Image (cartoon, rainbow, N blue to C red):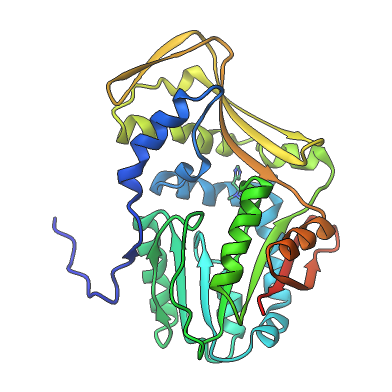
Length: 322
Ligand code: AVI
């Protein structure tokens, strides 16, 4: 069946094609020592769906905690943002978290969700268009960890929205570089960003080792994706999900561990895995409120208000870019 033709306005704008880079990045990462696969490749359609399921597990507190902060304080965000703003969301996810903000804002000009997964983004944009028919919804398929420069019309207040503590998936220096680029992109506006907090290591450990095994499937989907898209022949059952909190580095570390000595073919090339050898797949850094504010200030933002839940699990920061 041929998909219905899309109008130019409905078609997501592509800044870069993930498909072109994917196989190269996979080969490059697996040639490194230790081997790694960049965490942005979690989010194909299957991975995005698995991530939505992680957010529903009882152990993964960040999503529901942040969502309740966004709902409770939406009117305060709207006051700080002001009328007629253009909202850019970095890593649009399921589109769930933007709703309280869109509902509270006065006459938002446009909503631009940016996500690496084009198919997923299209679905999210279509749903939001039905719910907000008067709002210009302009999805952008792009890797927001790269260069996102675009002209900033001085007449429009541009606001960034970066929920979910995805900023924690950058190493701190990469996070600073991302914030520096965002401060330039959002000059005259600001950034509303969700940041997971340092806390009881047991709570953190459980969040990345849910009992239903959804996080394990999400992690192993990296191998299944390589089989689907890069002609690889990984036996996913011969790799184990391994995630733990490293309190010295204040980060969750996620790996896929080879459960045997084995050879895998990827894009026609052979890779050897020793028994017990790990592929690094993700960091998830946790911050104190003070440390994150200092990081944002070092990137050119002026840290303004911060909201935390009563249990101090999660924080939402309003950063101004003068
Ligand atoms: C998207 N990101 C903020 C999630 C996190 O918590 O670091 C990704 C994730 N990885 C395993 N579980 C959730």
